[in-house]
Image (cartoon, helix red, strand yellow):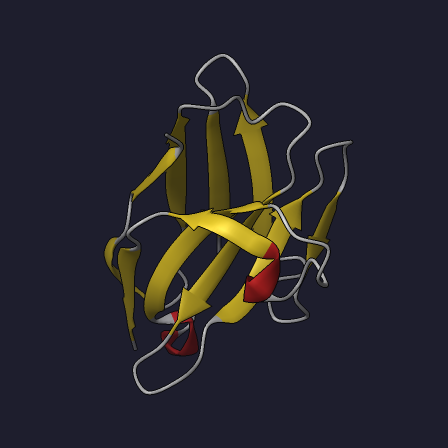
Length: 123
């Protein structure tokens, strides 16, 4: 049973930084494409960025140059480092494991999801 558990969310001020963690159990993250999505109230789930199983990363335009995804293989954990946070970054953030052949930016391409962690950015 694969399980993903996010942590690290909280209430911060605009301009602050925050690091989210996604601890994975039941399957190694090695060679597995992992992604971060977010969902703001009343909106659909939005792609934030991903870490390719073979190396490299891809980010949504809003995340480019502000967010960075890293991995700790020893801890089997995926991280999302966010800096210069803005009020519009307020959302529940989810990590997910890619499984399907759909576009890697689509939630449809992911089979396992965490429960999410709330990030709230005040102005």
